[in-house]
Length: 138
Image 1 (tube, rainbow, N blue to C red):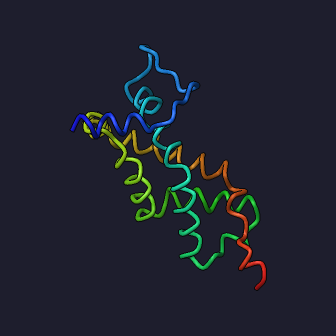
Image 2: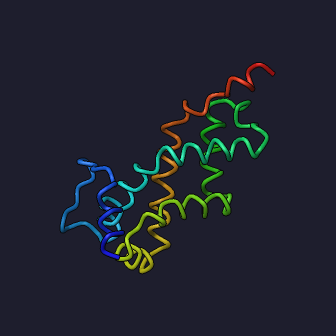
């Protein structure tokens, strides 16, 4: 078990701006110590998963204006429970056992924090979701 924990912690990127203070709430500390590095680590996978999400829904995303694309991303994360649970699984699967024990104590609040960070990363990356070349020819 110790090898898994150490391996997981070793591959996480460092985020110097995600500081941890004693005055922080336990949830905020967990967010900065665990969630942010994991979500940063999983960024490329999250982008690929959202591209697949767009594709599975007939590529309508590409026909939307930018404000509607942003709303589409928010809606996918907050309303599509199957997609939301898939995203949560990608993050939770990177937890150590100790982190999972902390997570289950307040999973509802931590899920909100987790999904908000994922949503912000996707919104900030909206330019990556431009129409693929094979769709431009159609």
